[in-house]
Length: 203
Image (tube, rainbow, N blue to C red; front, side, top):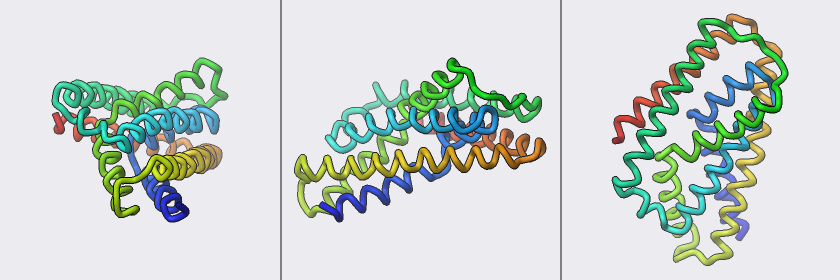
């Protein structure tokens, strides 16, 4: 069981700390509003991660890969990422004033994180692969207890990553000059638009 938990921790950290749409949006909102909105984007993404984890670990991923589900999901993902990317480029052009986030902004950050994660069709592939990896780790079809242990390890790594990433983004916000903030916004925008193009190519 400890081996399964350790593997899950490693997979969780790799998944959460890898560059992508959630990380880019976390950086954008963290530079604008600070630690809490950055953390809420991360927390929101956990909703999607948990849903995809359940889908991948229970084998439902095979059903969701049908074109009738995959194509609309991919279109939504591409459009949403493109919209976020354009917003980030606008922020780079006209640097917004940093302030403390009101309650509505915090709720929006949580929803955005969840939407990015839920709409990302790449998560289907990732969690389908992890389901197979778990079978390889245990050498047979995993039991319910082993699956729950793997899920717990992954989600623990995800929660720890949320605080780590939000803390680093807030540190950058406190020390970055306006020029570096513009560069960060522009980089986030380009990454998001690039990811939108990649998503669209998967249709």
